[in-house]
Image (tube, rainbow, N blue to C red; front, side, top):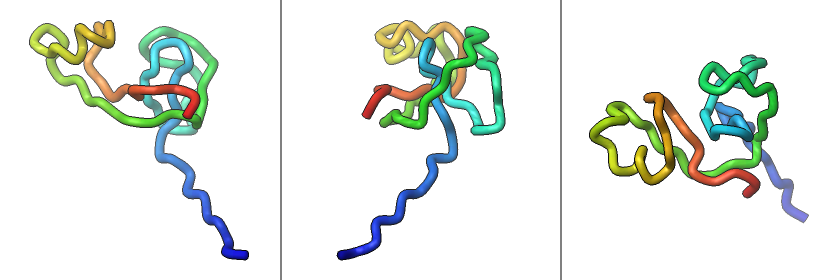
Length: 72
C-alpha cells in the first residue's frame, strides 16, 4: 500500500469570514473570530475591494487573502 503524504497548508481559514491566516494566529484580524479550519480550497487575493467584482460577489470588504470554499 502506498504511503500517503499530507502536506500542511500554509494557511488556515477563518470559519466566519474565510480570511486566510498563518497557523500561529489565534484571532482573525478581520472579524475577530477564534474559529479556524484547515479544510478549505481555492484562494482569492483581493487588492482593491472597490473595483473588484469578485470581492462584491463574495461580500469581501477588506483587502487580503481569502478561501473560496470551506469544508473540502
